[in-house]
Length: 289
View 1: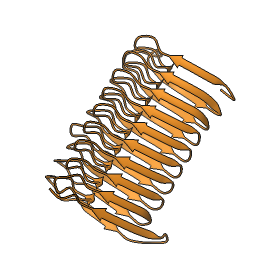
View 2: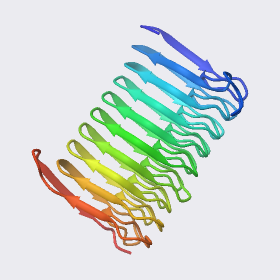
View 3: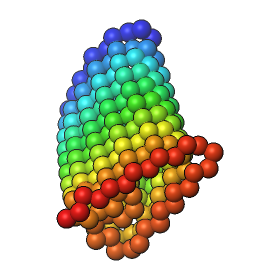
View 4: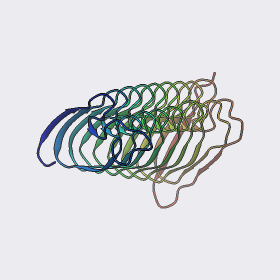
């Protein structure tokens, strides 16, 4: 789609743009194969469990690339804004530019997995991105009850807000973590909610393999979630490495760390802060009890 304007609403169970209602036994329907959006004005609303852009209910998003334009995507009834439908994963999502707003609903991530679906291999290299999860979904990452893996941000202006236990960037609520999250540029503002870390684990989830090498990062946990690291009452350890950039991390009330463990984490966390070739400015704050 080039220099076009599109408004699309899915039928019951369908994505606004992408797959129709389906299940894991479906060969085609329910799953979004490959889609590219370039310099288009797109408004896409899912229905009955469908993502705004991506999979229908019980359908996964296999690959979506946004290169520019203005994109507004809203999931419904457990669907991600961009990614998986209710019950399914959001994989291989790439945003290279544009003005992108993505809202998950009822457990869906803003960008990533639908409710009970993971968010895997999400890359942002540019543009302005605003992603908000719904009812346990991460802003960017896993849906409620699921993990997030391999999230990479190299540029752009990114705002990610989790909801009801979801991390801003990372795992969904109810014990699910965010692993291999890398930020090497851009401006990132990530906020967890109700036990979710700003960047890392959702409520009761860990943040493992979080690496920041450059960029400006503001990360805020909530109600026991670390700014960067573990969610409230995580059962597993978290690991964070920061070698460059300007980082401000604030843990949520309940003595959560600014960087490291959330409140009452069951295992110790590992935090490495070491300036290498980049400028480094780190501020980490706990809100106390």
